[in-house]
Length: 487
Ligand SMILES: [Zn+2]
Image (cartoon, rainbow, N blue to C red; front, top):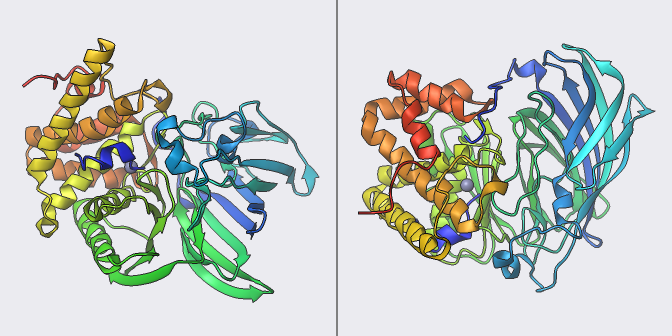
């Protein structure tokens, strides 16, 4: 995600988990088969989901846990912090949404299930334990009620956004990881999986989604679309009656830009294409056929999903809008392909994504954003934040390695994770030199694409590639020991 606070200035270990990658091959990926129908009058989505799970772990599983993000919009929850309230709620009134679980079965046998009080976790008790290397298939029927909110999930004036709309299997480490909701950042963590999704919606809508559309047919007033998304970390889509589409290609990849109310669509498509070219050259191949960039009503700057990014229609400045496109596309490498727990170790994807954005502008001078000025701007922003907050609060926690809930304020989160993240990667690059640094990025991507990483993994990967022990270096930055607050 890209926070608005940063956009205005145009830049202006966390717990070290024990388990690293858990990927044991494509055949063992979880598969999701979804049938969903959207009712645009009541703003509800009826869904049926079949989740086929292979127990690739060393333990038997007696229960399964799923994350229920739509409940973060339910009554009593804070879906956005107060500073985003007006951007989020188009009518100025708070609006609620949620997910109701209608049934959970396996092979037509009802299973006992429970949604916890917080609403974030669905626990399904299995009738028989699944042993390592065994498979199980679970069917979940659910209804999502959308809030009237310009958010990842919700309907606004221009688009209906479906990010994180279905029950998603929690990642298993030493037990299922149960993330909390958060108003800062992206509280998500999921593994690469295969998706077969059938969506039915009123034929006045145009769809932008993850994956590739295999077929389309009409059914009364609705259009029914079948989509395949293989080896992706998540599945999302957005609908609009206003979408226009412009496309181009980068090698074998089709780049689509969905927009409305706009004159800059050719330039915005061009920078998206340039970003795909540059990031493939710098990090490695984008292994899918399609990337969709969709303008949406969205209270933050943008949001990333596999093969699909949302760009907020509230980003009025054309240069900032382009910056957000590049940032969100960099997430295809950092978050989508190389995954991490975005709740507990947000720096892993956000710091590297923000730095990758600076690299894009360095390699593409035609956009007129100077790399050195970006770095200097980041340093100025960071010093200003430290100075201001030290005056107010006396002391500031400058560590980057915290979970989303451990950041005390939004500026603290943005400055420690995004701004300081840029400075950290610039500093590593200057220490190692360009050859070693870019080799580190390439090797890290190659080693961990489709997998999940922890802070230890990136430190070890960079140390190995550069033949330099970078543990002390990284930890000094991550723990907040590097002093940046004086000239
Ligand atoms: Zn981001």
